Amino acid sequence: MSAARTGLWFGVVGVAAALTHAAVFGLLQSALWPELANAAGFAVAFFVSFFGHRFLSFQDAGTGLWTSLRRFAATALLGFAVNEAVFVLLLRVFSWPSWPALITALVVAAGQTFVLSRFWAFRR
Image (cartoon, rainbow, N blue to C red):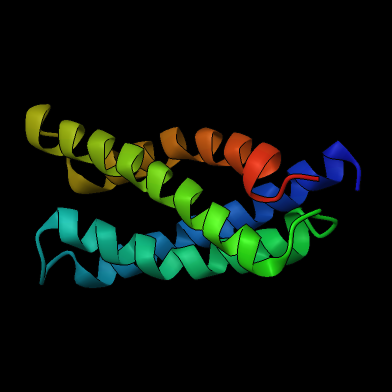
């Protein structure tokens, strides 16, 4: 698959996962601490992201499904650690409102996730 097509699908799947993450966050933020609502959003969006990337973004992956899942889980958890760190920093240290903090955190983690997904989790 061409790099442009991979990038396009990565963007589409990434937006779908980010919207899923945001929807779960939005549903739970009034009932949980924002950090926990963010974690729940990540957990649900993980599945959207993995299956979308495995079967769309990196459909010609040279790794088996389980290998990709383990590697992607490590990639996603690292991305979430960055996401949560940025989110907490903006929310608690700089007193940003939760939505701008969440959106910024999602964007910061997205680039890291692409690089690790492309060159390791779904390595060709």
